[in-house]
Image (cartoon, rainbow, N blue to C red; front, side):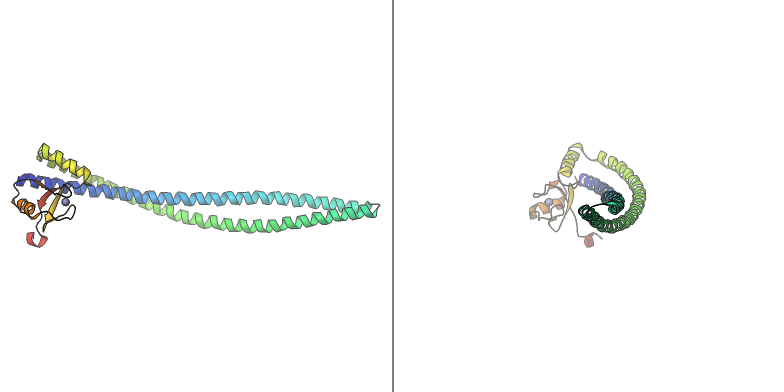
Length: 240
Ligand SMILES: [Zn+2]
C-alpha cells in the first residue's frame, strides 16, 4: 500500500503541474481578450464621435447653403426696394429684409457653435485614436509574447502528459477511478497531505485516530470532511 500511496502522490504532483500550466495558458488568453475588448470599446467610441462629427458637418453645409440662398433673396429684395411705388410695399419689403437678416444671424450663431463642436469632436477622435494605437501596440506585443509563452507551455504540457500516461499505468484501475472521481469534484486535487493533523485539502482537523492510522500507510484513507485521499505530510524542517 505504501507504494500505491506514493504512486498516487506522484500522479497528483503531475496533475497539479498540468493544472498550473492550464491556468497560465487561460490567464494569458484572458489578459489578451480583455485588451481586445477595451480596444473594441474605444473604437466604438471613436465611431460614435465620428458619426456626431459627420452629422454636425452635414448640418453646417445645410446652414451655409441656407445663408447663401437668403443672401441672394435679400439682394433681390433690395433691388425691388428701389422700384416700389407705395410706402406700404416699401415697409413690407424692408421688414422682409430685416427678418431674413435676423434669421441669417441666428444661422451664423449656430454655425459658430457647430464649428466649436467640430473642433471638440475632432480633438476627442484624435486623442482616442492615439490611445487606441497605443493599446493596439500593447496588444500586439502581448500577443507575440503570449504566442511564445504558449509554445513553451505546450512543450512542457506535452512532456507532462507523457509522464502522466506513465504514472497512470502504475496505478491500479480501481484506485485510479476513485482518484479521478474525487479530482473532478474537488477542483483537480484528489490526493492531499495531512500535516500536524490538518488536511491540506480543506484545512480541517482529521480525527487523531485517523491520523495515527495514516502514519502506518497500510491502507488508503479519505478525509472525513472533503473526502480527498490522504497521506502523511511531515513538517518541512523534519524532512529536510
Ligand atoms: Zn480534507
